[in-house]
Length: 352
Image 1 (tube, rainbow, N blue to C red):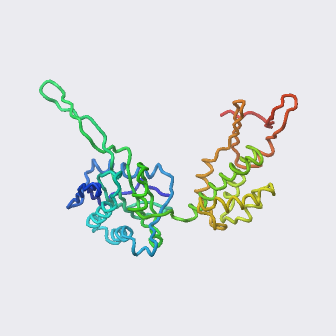
Image 2 (image 1 turned 90 degrees about the vertical axis):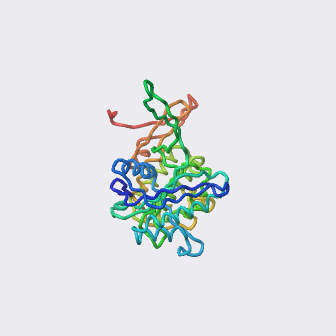
């Protein structure tokens, strides 16, 4: 879990990159930018807001041979080892980004390289390097008193409410390529930012594995359990899956299949589905891993435990224990009406 509220900007460098394939210029600032007390909180909010609002899917620097050959990894490491050299290193980082700006669709813009202190991750205080880029310019009006009238001046600038591109490289797990968060609002050139410049892949830890496996289970429920049984059983399967993850520290696939998939006919279907779809979720060879409680909590919030009926009635099954759905909801068939029905048992209506 990351906390960015106490983060402090210790160094800020601002440069500009154009599109190299269109022969646009690269502008490198000679000195670091001195932040004023007025601008500091605004620029910090501009840089970090998107990361606070974003789900924590971490990346890490990767290289097909070895991390020692990864250019950006080495430059970032240089800043962590000697923060006083952050501005000089920022020039190299910006030049590296310019060298990757080769596709015609890539927009030029300002590049900000920032050194942060007091970033808190997993209750540990660490430093971080931020690399941000503003690409889109927005029109705004300025007003100037001119004799007896207000003069309207049309200008263009950066909209501080939305970051175009950004990477927050956290000084943790450096031997694995650091833990990195990325933001990219312009999806048309994702390969340029994530692959060509950053050179990252997903950080595969317990948080990653837990999220991916639960997402896989959610799609198994939709693609296999629902067609084979019904919506109630789909919801019940996901409730059992969530409760299994929430009540165990470590995941064991054989134990999971035995406890969660009650229909024995679906157990081989689960294995077959994993053989077909496991690669999509990076879990094809995954059978045992530590469980991340925070990932389970996040995933539980997103699972829809709602049965939508064609009679414009919804049944929302918000259960801590999946047993409640089995004890207090029954599905049946009414011969007279030739319709299915759900019978719901309760003691009293709760007032909320």
